[in-house]
Image (tube, rainbow, N blue to C red):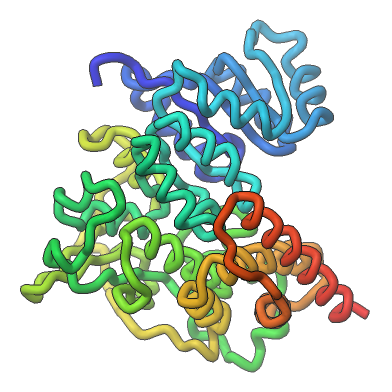
Length: 401
């Protein structure tokens, strides 16, 4: 990397965004922040603008942008404040931009990420919903526009690191088996309720659900981890990222989150990527790929590891995982529907409207009642997403009354 790379960070005030800025601040000779984008948290965004001095800051709404402008009014900060999805899309495609970190939670990240892909950027994908909703369309656009797509999810980043270099540099249409790969082993911790009495899951509180034993994450992904819907979404994402069938992927419960995923080869070898559970490692890997940079993460001390265990997932404990895997087999309409329903259901749980085990019920009912046909174009995907959200909201109303 001879000259500084200019970055766009979508979701700057969230967990991944802040971790990205931490890595960037440790490698200032390599990276400059061009755009920071976020949802509503104007106070945090003001702090980030003052510290990192991006050229542009984009908030989701006009109100949030006005709040940000007010916070910055009496400071030396020269950042230009904008708002809205179109501004995010436009700046992701800006000719000066080298790298786009896509870390907006949920479906809101899809269009700006696609904009970056269509401009042929290096896209670091932390927003798994982009691929869950639009897998084929997304991957086709990556190939068509010669974009570079690098996964940030710790599991997909681990898989990427364990693949042969011939597959790492492939543009999406290579077959795993032809390169000696027999299985992708997708690891998951099992979340906070791995050993909890299954009959008490209906009583889980919000604070219990968001208390992940290993990772520090946002609320939505923490709940998804507790239901293992997160692993289901990652399963779907892996199918598209690595051009494989559902039969090529196995989910393995690994409570310690030391191995982040594995790749099994025809000769019996299994390569695993290991490290302390810290998102700065995959972020630093993708930012610098194919080189390596300081992430600020302590290496593993093997003498400290006293327990290292693996089990199969129990689908009666994690029905959302089974639902997502089944949706993956059923196709694009099903995965879009499940993702949309889950966003609505998790939000309702976090707001105290439904119970923890109702999340699965809402997701399953929404999928069962969906009437999607062949969902291929962006308009069809967005319509499918919209209808699923309406349907899920109606099912929630029935639960709460």
